[in-house]
Length: 403
Ligand code: AMP
Ligand code: MG
Image (cartoon, rainbow, N blue to C red; front, side, top):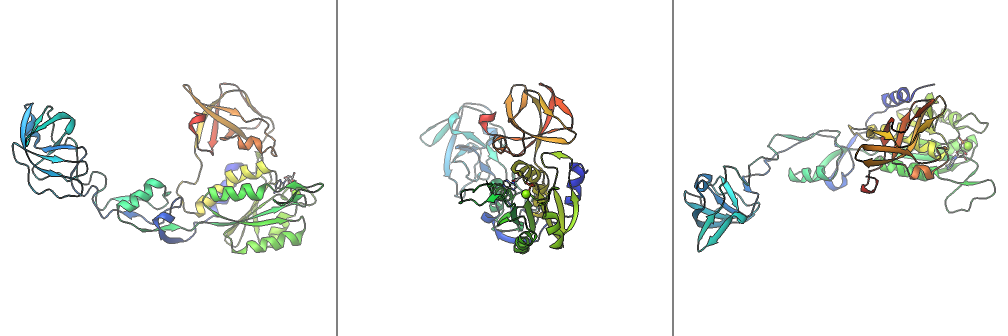
């Protein structure tokens, strides 16, 4: 059976980044940049004051208190009308250009102004309270590289350098199919023998969170024609994602249906818990995943295999979740030979991060997924004792209340 690393390597070796498109920067949030961004500007464009105060020559402040003549005012958005000469000061406000001749700003708090003069109570050095030209960006600087994830700071930076439209990679369209005679669609009360369809919804949300565009293909019955028909509906998507029907039961038809739909299947079964039965293949260039049916298995295999693939398709340089090391706050047991991806909460205290199992680790126990901040990676047949080290894949923003 393949290890998780071997399976992921096979998957990523077959996944190529999608083409780019040009969009307004406000539509680029959460997407991956497809071009280098070079600043055509110096930011700030000229030396300016970082304080409200007086623009002076630093040499005039060496003997304090010093009394200087106030010869003008410069506000943000204005242009200095006059140089600052020896013995002179210009009243200046935050963000206003430093007048020629001045080389420092004395903060207002250190001054007393009376009748066209100002008395400085503190000496300043050259450059004090001055933001030099080009301090943040120099013209010609590469400020963002292709593959960068565009978050709020990056969007602000694009605006700063005057970029209104930007090339980003296309979001992967991901068609999601649930399979199983037992599934009742949301909005219908499950009949006798039926259970609610969970996976279409959790996977839809995971696709969106990963930066993809999900498309819901609904539920196929455990009949070859039903699965094949719905798979065809997903023909315009970049990725096909089905859940359930990939194990060894009599009604586990997804692998055959994928093959009939033209898929070459590259792998099946990975040594992990939850979620051993997972299929990956391709129809032409399009990746197809057959995830296991149990809701937690489907979500965990999405995290480990589908998410990195979608991030690669979407052009992100960083495709993996962050990991951290934590100490087990109580024993964490992984019985059985397969590597465990165990749901844990994370807690921060003075000694660092601690991890605790969310409870029942059954692959159908969705409530313990809801509580989880991440997945502890534990080798087979291992009990991590209380205080022992575990590696945790973090899939939730760690809020202050878990700190
Ligand atoms: P299977 O691999 O088809 O045997 O499914 C494994 C388990 O997952 C069974 O208990 C199914 O009822 C359950 N399951 C399959 N698909 C879904 C779904 N879309 N939502 C919730 N549970 C599911
Ligand atoms: Mg089934």
